Amino acid sequence: MLNSINPKSAIPIYVQIMEQIRRHVASGVLAPGDRLPSVRELAVQLLINPNTAARVYRDLERDGLLETRRGLGTFIAAGAAALAVSERRRIVQESVERLIDEARALGVSDETLLEFVQDALARQPEGRSSR
Amino acid sequence: MSKEPVSNGFAITTHSLTRRFGRKLALDSVSAHVPTGSIYGLMGPNGAGKTTFVRCLLNLLDPTAGSATVLGYDVVRDSVAVRRRIGHVAALQSLWEWMSVGDLADFMAGCYPRWNSDAVAAVLEPVGIEWEDKIQALSRGQRTLACLAVAIGHEPEVLLLDEALTGLDPISRREVLRNVIDVMHAGNRTVLIAGQDIADMERICDQVGFLVKGKLLWESTLEELKARVKRLRIEHPEAPPPEIPSDAFNVERAARQTEFTVRDFTPDRVTALAAPGRRVEVMDRSLEDIFIDLAGPQLRVAADLEAPR
Image (cartoon, rainbow over all chains, first blue to last red; front, side, top):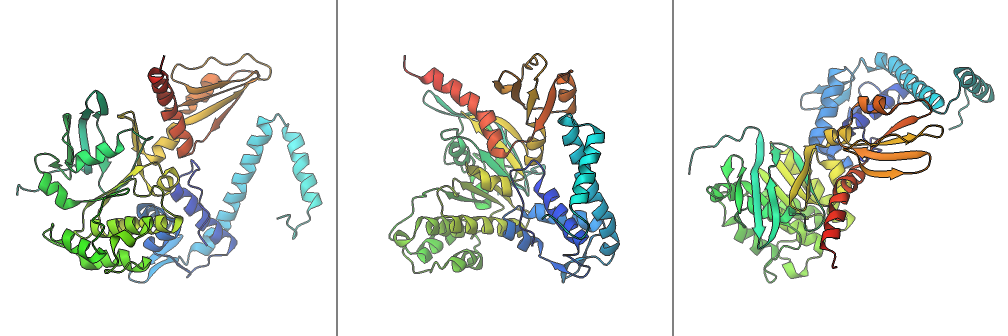
């Protein structure tokens, strides 16, 4: 499930994995109580530094997304469901910000960009996704 | 043996380490710092001095000048203490061909005060290497794994892999890396990987050093390297081209676009280049891109100097 890291990116690997877990929680692929691979398992699966894997779990635990039960492993925390809503907003907002940057870099006016978005929304009624 | 020395959080440190072979400077005043608990990727083109560096740490070569410590022990003065704490795997290591893997393990076990046979077996078993197998009958990947197995029998705190990944098939490579992960996971161990397997290093190393022509051109965390080395692309369809900063390298100029790499990127750089009619884009670099950017110019200059007249 956690297998699409891009080591060539300038985004550190631990950030990429954290982002992936956050996305899976936001979309419901990972639900409270689900067990995650151990630090060693994750490191071997992705062939990454075990320190990197440990950092992912430490940081997500601090954020309340994961919890470690002694001797049992690392799990999606009970409170993660509440976080999922804000995660969804955050992920979409980040995409919107990237879109705005791109449009402005290409000299597209805000007004035109808004038209593009409205047209695209009209072409794809809710409940249907192009991907 | 002397009392436990202080290593200040660094498993390996070198101070202006220099090694000369006749007129050739294989190591030119290298001051490297390998943090304890890290996986350090020592990268460099062929002949950069990586193997000389490793051999100095093992005291297989004496430094011409400068010094090096492993876990606080001086590699020359305390070479026995260093060798007990260090494991070493080299590419195409010469092994006694007529020995079996078990003979080799027994021989190595005799060299150390303690030996963990289970740790050795844990490397060999998953890849189907038997104690009775003759070394001459092993494939290249299996030989590397056999070397790795006997290199960790004395439970070294520092593991040196010198081109150990080079030329391995994907399955053997994965096995070597899996074992590196297990070694790291077992405790506060340190691994130094010398080689050019950039894709693997980009995954597994947290520290990187670039060795080119015997000089250490860069040393930092991988994260810092990627944050600082950036390529700037300036599009100037309706404006004159920007002035190239003096520290820029790998400069490419076209009619309406200029590109160069900087090694100390800050957002101020973009502000400094901004002008009406110009668009500045900051591009991330992969470890391979950075390797070529940093090492390329040095190598080209060197090639020019060495070219016959």
